[in-house]
Length: 281
Image (tube, rainbow, N blue to C red):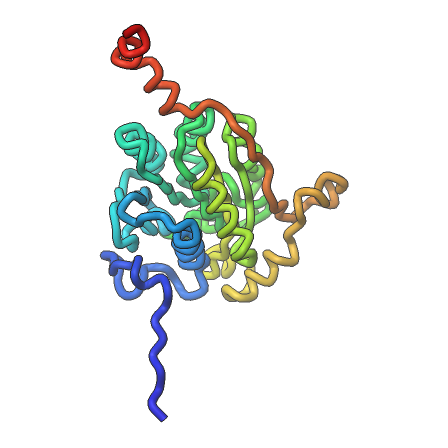
């Protein structure tokens, strides 16, 4: 009986990047899953791929855009949201999706994150949070949990971790959600809602990094880390009734913000001289 070859449904969106075949990501890494979540969300929304631009910066997550077989911009470390803003302002008809790692999002790119949320720019920011800088050897990042072992915190991380969803919520983002790679359907749904939202959307997806963070903290391989993520996850409704001590080491998942507010590009375009002239005509 002849074997039937089945092609992955995302291959039509995939191009071989410069990092090798099939990707530069390690075995068990969660970034490839999130790449597919993004593609699946766009497919379910029936978006024209030629009207979607992926933007990335540096690091493991920053390379996601290089495998997108349509328009992309591979930019500077910490600056993808700045480039994404420029693209959206230049052509409002485009859907602009920006993938960033936790370090890029909240450290070198932290101010871009705050200002993008404050302005309510109509771009989708997807943060892949694996609690460390994976590409450069596994150093701690602003989201590394207190006590986490990394290459730069071998005796345990001494700083409180950053809650990025709380940050962008306070800054003015109009859609905010957090899930993990063990919640594929919820992640896809969140990305779909982020794309449909007219304003700044932030989706954080907690992902496994077995090569560095998992190994340093003896958390096992990729599947073992995913199992642990699921066990640690608490829905936002449940979390509201839990004490700070009960929430220790938990991952609060769910939708935190879904609202409407004037979008940055529309505000700017309303002040164009030609708009005022046509209004007075």
